[in-house]
Structures are given as C-alpha cells and as structure tokens.
Length: 432
Image 1 (cartoon, rainbow, N blue to C red):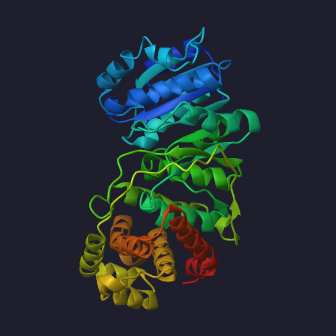
Image 2: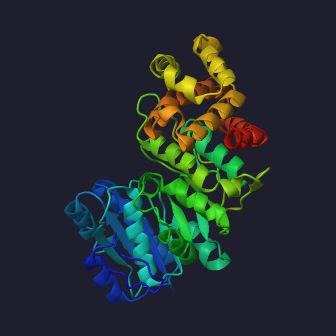
Image 3: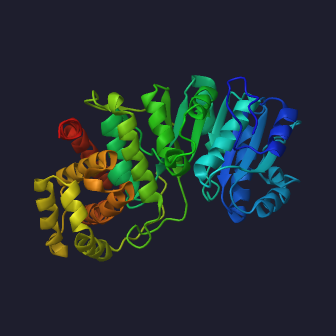
C-alpha cells in the first residue's frame, strides 16, 4: 500500500508496478480509464477509439490510457500487445502524435467489483495530477473517437465536474433506468440526468479526488453501485454537471424477464442506501431542473429489444405467492391491498398504476433503510423484483404501439408523477 498522494489518498487499489510506471511518466493532462473483467475480445475496439480520440481532439494534451483488469490479466495484456503498432491510425485520417499515448494494463487490488477497478483508475488520475478523465465500458461495440471529445471537452473547456452519457436507446432498453433510476434520482435530488447509470462518464480531477476521499470503497455502494453512486455524489455535492449525446449504445441487451442480472439488486440497493445518506439533501427538493446536453442529437435507430410480457406477468404473480409475507411487512396496508388486486388482473387488462408503483418504491426504500420487522436488505430487494416485473410489463403494454419519442413521453410523465408524490416519501420517511 502506498500513500504518496499530496492529497493524502492511500493507493491501495493500484498495484506497485503500475504506480512505479506512472511515477516515471510523471504527469498527464488526460486519463482514460477502462475497467475490465475478462473483456479481451472487445476491449481492443475501445482502446483504439480512445487512442484515436485523444490524438484527434486533444493533440496538444498528454494522455494515458489505463485498463484496470479484474480477471485474466494475461489475456488483456495480449489484447493490448496486439495493438502496439497502432496501425489503426493509418486508415482513419488521424495523424499520429510525436509523443504517442501510453497504454497501460494493471490488475487492480482489493475487493472484487467494478468499484475497485475504478478506484485504481482514480488513484492513477490523482497520481498523474490530470486535468480531466473519462471512464469507458470495456465491452462497447458502438464507441467512436468522437465519444472522447464529448466526454472530455466539457471538463477542459467549460469547467464541468461531471459529464454523464446521453444515449439513443430502444424504448425497452434500460428498464431499470427508466422505471427506477432516472425518475427516482430526478425526484429525489432535483436534477434531470437521463442516464445516471450509463457507464461512460467524464470527470474533473476535483470530482475524482472528492470520490477517492469517501469512506465507502470497502462497501457495496462503491463495489457494485458505482455508477449511480458517482452521479448522486456529483449532484449532492454541487459539482457542475452536464450530459453529452453519444448516439446509440450497442451492448448485450437482455429481456429483463429472462435474465435479471445482479445489476438490479446492486443498483436499486445503492439508490436506497444513498437515500439514507443524503436525506438532508433531498428532503427540501420540490421540483427538478434540466441538465445541459452537448453534442448533436441524431435520429439513429437503436437495436430493438424484445420483451416477453406474459413471462413478466407470470413471474410477478408467482412472486406474490413467494414474497407475500414480506410485501405485507414492507407495504402500507392500502398499497399492499392494491398490489394484491393487480395480481388478479388478466393479461389483456394488466396494469401497475404509476402512483401505486411510486408508493411501492417509497415503502421499499423506507424498509431497506430501517430494516422493518427484522428483514434483511437482501430480503427486501429480492421481494421488490416481482413488482418491478409488473411495472415493466405494464409499461410495455401501454407503449407497444408507441414510437421511441412517444415512449419517452410516457417516461417523462412517470417522472413528473414521481415529483408530485414527493410528499408521500417525506411523510413515510419521517413519520412512522
């Protein structure tokens, strides 16, 4: 473990070999961090886009690209080694720099998880005393060099502290974002950040150092809910925030009814926990304000996402039998009765009303923070999943004949309803 930082940060995620090389480099203007877990097959594309983007848009800046690997280090090193000749410059009409960007690979140290990978990247940024940084997902298939301009330029030229992505997505891609993360973050903290868990961000060094100083890096907040945590901290600590339109994000989309990954528990659990931490910030927020968007908003057609509605409804009804005893403890009696009514609906008339969904989320958030009736955090989040299936099915049924813009209007209407129901949250949270 090292603590050579002038800011007192302990470098415990960045290994000694990487620290030594970064100290030899001395300093840099920009760092591009790519957290990875066995993404050797896709990471080459991301590295090339980052390298080309730095050369095209920041030719006078000294850049470093750092891959923070949590899995097979040798495979990732081999993928980077295959790019050493940088022949991709020859076919892109982008001039190679006299002092080319260095690409480093390190095996992060500490608890397994994306958060620890990012901590290593932040430690490197602090050590190099960069002006700005960007984080890119390692499995991106739609990234282009322009993403670097859009994520970094607002920090360097306009003094933004945090740049979030704004993607063009299919109406059924990102249901956790659409049903929970976006409307809840918006109503809680008063900022309309459309993709608060997007995965690709731009940072100032001030934000990086603020995040490094938080005493959460050994907790699940930073390990699993890192994206929503960063967004929430940036908003609550008054960093200047903007969004950049990156176009379509192509990734491995999945039907939420067939493969609800640990992402749900990680993201939603983090949102709920942050509600307890930042209660004093959101308690007085009564409305939301828009967040600036940079970039050209093209009309690119996202890849369709197919959802099995019947499967979602079936899983909700099955869950009512498995989790009714938890629902009864967590939900206010009226909300519990109404959820039970929804379980009896036929598929053709199925609906989870937005106002009921909001009250359900509030009840679960309260229970998560106060552990009512001896329930664990895991019990509470698992019991919420079937009701989330119901809300997703309800949204799909209502929007199946809508185009992308019309579906987005439904999401905005739902988000406005979250704001209108803020008094229920306040009364539920503070009066029992």
